[in-house]
Amino acid sequence: MENLYAAIKSASEKGVALGHFNISEFAALRAIVQAARDINVPVIIGTSEGEAGFIGMKEASALIGAVRGDTGHQVYLNADHMRSIDKAKEAAEAGYNSVIFDSAASSFEENIKKTKRAVEEVKSINPDILVEGEIGYIGVSSELLDKVPEGAAISSEDMTTVEQAVQFVEETHVDLLAPAVGEIHGMMKNAKNPNLDIGRIRDIRKAVSTPLVLHGGSGISDEDMTSAIYAGISIVHINTEIRVAWRMGLEKGLAQDGDRIAPYKILSDPEGKFSDPEEEIYNVVLKRLKLFNRLI
Image (cartoon, rainbow, N blue to C red; front, side, top):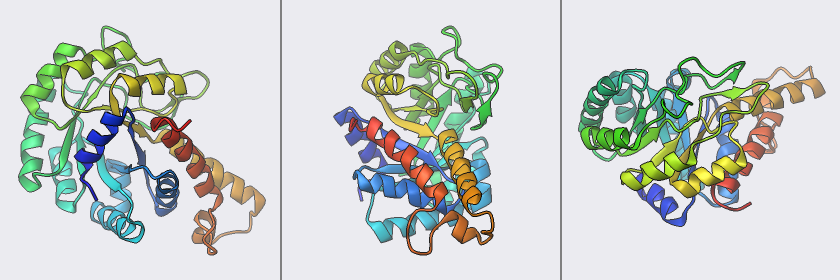
């Protein structure tokens, strides 16, 4: 299996993007991997600090390793939004392919200082792991939102500038960069998510050689998503849409058979068929992967 950086480079050369989808349990993982296999594209599985705390970092790494062995598919594991260097180092020690060190809530200068140190310490454990840095606060929660997170950088004057991106990459030596370009973490309940600044993505991509990552992909329109990928986004993060699909599938299944109590019968099917949560997640992931890979 080619390494993650090679997979990202290959996607960029084709003008497509890798999909990054978060999991909290095995049912979601099955659905995501199956969707990626069905259209034969690589996929990145993410675990946030909370998700990794629930699953266990070593356990998540072992699980992804087993999936790779069973399927032979390109499945990569990312530690999503580690907000301490110790957590980032823990992910490197557990065998993750990449880690996001998130100090975006700090001042720009402090963010550079902390991220540079994180890169050095994580790479000292595993020189081959990819380290991603983030510029610009876009919220922290992959949930349904009543309003845009307070302080989120969605106005033009608050988004990542080309100059900031260049300085950040040069001083921190990150492998991947997530700029604030109008996105937010989470999905609005009763309104559209903010629009992306496609021109800004294009300008930043021209100025830095580091691949760009779009966080907060849930709720972004297909048109904005396609334009962002054409402009230079190499990886797109989706989490809230997965959580909503899981919840919808669970409620659907229990409504049809409220007497089911065995977790494995609720979250999977002993005959190998998709459960309701898996089917809902599969449909979301398949649609997004097709969009990212220009298959629709």
